[in-house]
Picture (cartoon, rainbow, N blue to C red):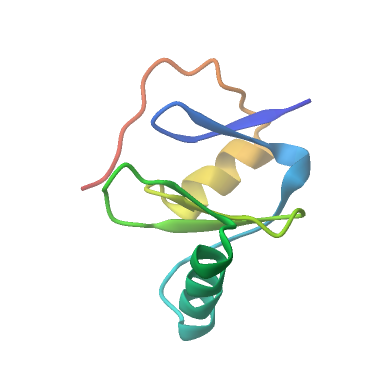
Length: 90
């Protein structure tokens, strides 16, 4: 099982990720609100600005403060949770 670090020590199974998108568009904002209302939203931003929205195969929506490109790069490079340091853009 490959695990992907999505920030602040939170990890997601790579096999469960369907899409990694930006939260800027109206349809994504609607998906986030519907997941919040339905109890399927996981907020892993720790109060920071949401930069990536991860959609899983179990219909859960995960919010991350890490850029979507960074998460995709970690997924492509098969990077695991062995990272000790992490840099966030403010």
